[in-house]
Amino acid sequence: MPDRLDAATWRQRAAAHAERAERLTAGRIARRAAGINDPIEDFLFTYYPIKPARLRAWHPGSGVILEDARGEEIPRWYAASGDADLIVDAAALLDARGPLLGFIHRLLRGTRERPAQYGCFGLHEWAMVYKLDPERVRHESTPLRLTPAETDAVVERHNIACSHFDAFRFFTPEASGLNRLSPTRENQPLLEQRGCLHAGMDLYKWASKLGPALPGELLLDCFELAREIRILDMRASPYDIGAWGYSAVPIETDAGKAEYVAAQRAFTTRSDILRDRVLDALLRTREAASA
Image (tube, rainbow, N blue to C red; front, side, top):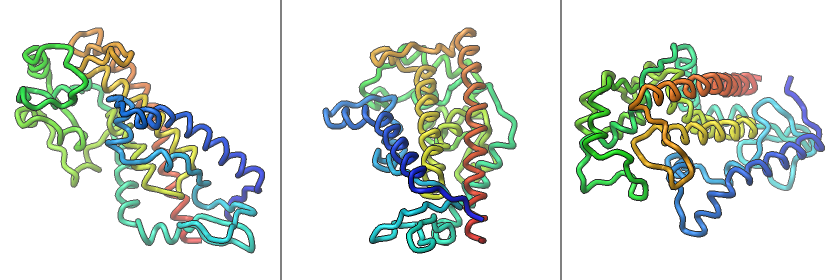
């Protein structure tokens, strides 16, 4: 049987969600109006093309009846339940997005079950500028904190073992040949592992693709995790982000490596919890569609 939310309860949750989303997106909206770019936080709105309005929209998730929620039109991906109630149309969502949701389930389940690896030290960002042509600048507003030669030397002193395709595909040609793994879109479900910062960050992307099948609060939880991971990702990068108020995590040193791994382990724990919640939302969608 589906869960039920009375009108007062779901409206309170929707209002609290909208307020939280507005707080999380206010900086992006203000910067965009002023023509300013933050290379750290705004990455979440450019790399992941999810608009602030999407984040403000609240949904209860699959298998939940919203009492007294019907207006003149039934919203997309919802169905009527009784005279005045609404419920997410899980069957329609599965019909439309079945292959994608199946891929997400395989990817997240495989990632969750695979042992975490903590030896990458965020070197993917370094590999993206390794022996980079001086005419090609990856982040125009963000300078390197070491010289190009010193940056290249850091890459050459380490074993590169990036398992995440969407990071690996931005490696320079010279760095690609140094990577011990060969990630592709096809083998992504077989390689991604729990300790990867980008796998944790991407929970936000995969969660967004569930649409109304995912509780709105969970989408914002994934966004907040992605934002915090992005900060560590850039602090451990070869870029000087002091102008944005962040100190470096110098992974080229033993102390920096230890700091990075400690933060990486904490993010793995948080990612595991959110990954399980997204997997549960997928299960509830299948169950609701069957019912």
